[in-house]
Image: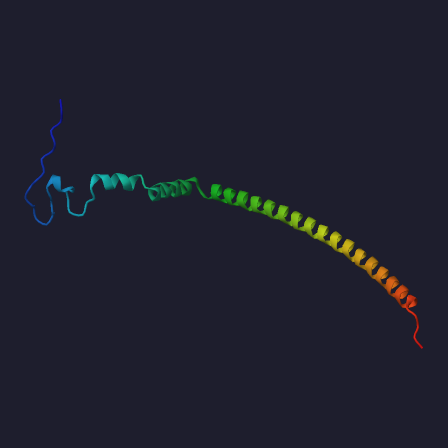
Length: 124
């Protein structure tokens, strides 16, 4: 058997602000059913539920999660330090190599200048 829809009052009773069913709301200020369903499934509502569940788990779980995050961040920073140190050493080695090449170039230049001065005829 099909259920018959409930009849709503068509005349306002006091200051309750009752409205007809076809107007979309039953009491003044209420939202239509579609809006209520959207609100129940909104991401903000879900986020609120997650927060409440996290609070019910207690401080210990939050503390352990925090410790895990800190340890992960520390491990990441250690890796970054290793990479930076390796890059510094590589650049230091490269600098030393360039310095040696420069010194050798300077010595060769001095030798060439000496040869050049010796090969010039002296003017009297």
